[in-house]
Length: 423
Image (cartoon, rainbow, N blue to C red; front, top):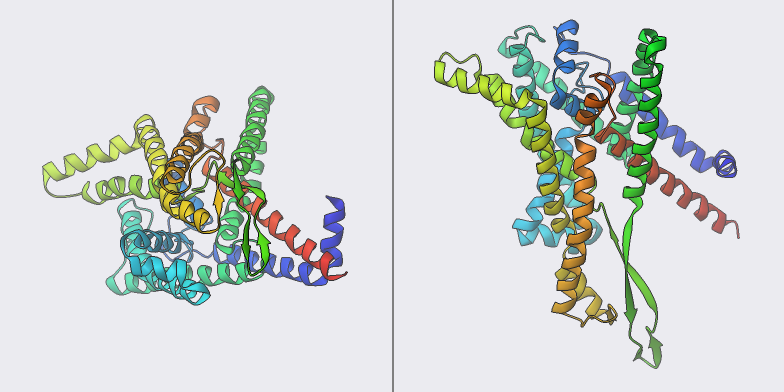
């Protein structure tokens, strides 16, 4: 490890890239502490302490939402736009052809559509957030003109973060959007640790020790699940083309246990968000029946048992759904057959497709259950620790581990490339 750190210091180009990315992350953190006008900080703190769902939204905003900063929406609208565009590839063949068969130009056009879609989504989400915070007494009432100005500012904040994320990605040492979320999570750790140490007494030491042990085990399990994959053996038949012989080799097809990543948690969070938000809007309705139904919905979604159970179910379902989007057994089977490859013991064509579907469904079940448990980990942590502020990070741990592993892999790839260039 120390040898790799030494190589990073020695390779000027790589060192400059890392410093550049760190500088952009500092810029993001500075923007995340600039609040919009008229914020009641005490009400804001109380609101986030009592609302687990908005704690998750704050996670994906990179910590900007908890401060009601000018980047309060974070990269959430851009992530949502990217997911919508990916779903459109399943509905419209032209969109799928543009993304999968259009080459680099097609992917750039696809990404441009995602950027454009981000703007209206940011406006809609920003308006909903501002109205909700006004109803909760977190924000002072705004005039129509002030509302428009604030919406423009926070939408521009999202576009600004999207631009920062793409600048980071261009450096080739990690995904910029993920790094922004990662920076927001990590930035909250020192404040939480200092606050806990200031309130800790001798009787709480065993509880904190148990929590640290559990945290290490959770991180280790997330790393294991993130890296786990099923290797299907693939053989290529020998064939002669133009007087040369090709094939005759054995390799494998890697199938990841968690091929969906964080997307199912984002999907589930979006679904779980709407009933509570709609209920919060309608709870002040002048119609008694509407207000009563809205109050019941709000109370139901504030029930930790109900919310955690539904959240777990949605994460599992969306894991299967998104895995079906990103892994198409029919396409993989067709590509293997075109290249002269086959799975030993399985006939090419439809039998291979059915076998791939069988295998991916089995390993996805394990990945879906694990992802669901990770998603509801904060609720489990609250039951274990009896402390709402001391929870096992759940989605935060998954993001941090995934970003660290991906960044390390990309840095190692650049180090290896530089070593080859020296010879």
